Image 1 (tube, helix red, strand yellow):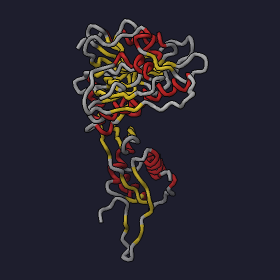
Image 2: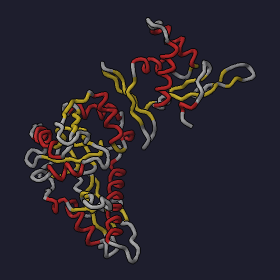
Image 3: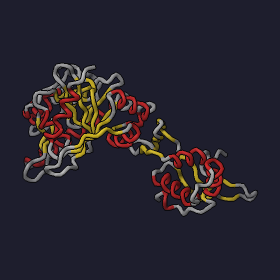
Image 4: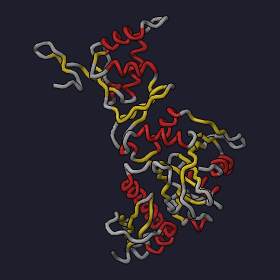
Length: 117
Length: 254
């Protein structure tokens, strides 16, 4: 299934896919993901880079939006939620992150993709 | 070792080609003579494709084309993780060894540019270029895969010498790297434009082989691009329009 086909809602769990390499200059950042021969090299937007850092080991879409609001503040024209959604879709399309639905245990704890057990 | 083995030097590796079919063998020997080398025990062996009884000349041509692809694949596999490999044609200056690598996807003009601008220069490859960390280049003087003017298919595997090309007489080294884009219309002036390093990584990565097998691949690729003064994108219509760029890069000194 295409990763973008995962329905995105505030509870969608996002996780980083391990990077093969990352190269940064003053102009931005390029990352390499995937395995041979299907590796991909993707240039990240500034917001994409911030989102990737904020996603860390795993977070929900709602938590990501909160974290980015905390880091960057609300954009002057508003619309942070839409911008976050756009960047998440872009990162999913590039397969730099994965998305899935968290599962609740009997204790109500989230089990997140990529989380250590 | 048997007489049916033909050893060739490809991207710094020695590959043995086993050709037993008497219909293929003389053609393979002729096509590959520019990179024939001494036998090396234990080197990888590529079996020439099987040709059925009653095969037509087109069937033979297809088999030889497949053989070239098999040798290339084997050589790439042998050098994976050791050198940076690009889908590129390359030519060198026969005195200084300065080399231009012209990167482009398959079927978009590498062979035509090499064939057009190659006479008088050293022929490195029309397909794959291997670059070491010190920028030295291992030639791969493979047969050129020439599209037939009438139908286009199958391609003929032609010895570079038969096309007026010569093997390098000195050690080639990477002096410049360009991205070929044959997207200009007839009569439109060619465009040569620098590509910023991050974009260069995004554009070059799909035209590499086994990039992820190299340690810190993006850093290595960026280092290589920066060491030769950055990537240039050459947008053109006719192969001859690439000549000034080739001349400029082959005029560089180390």
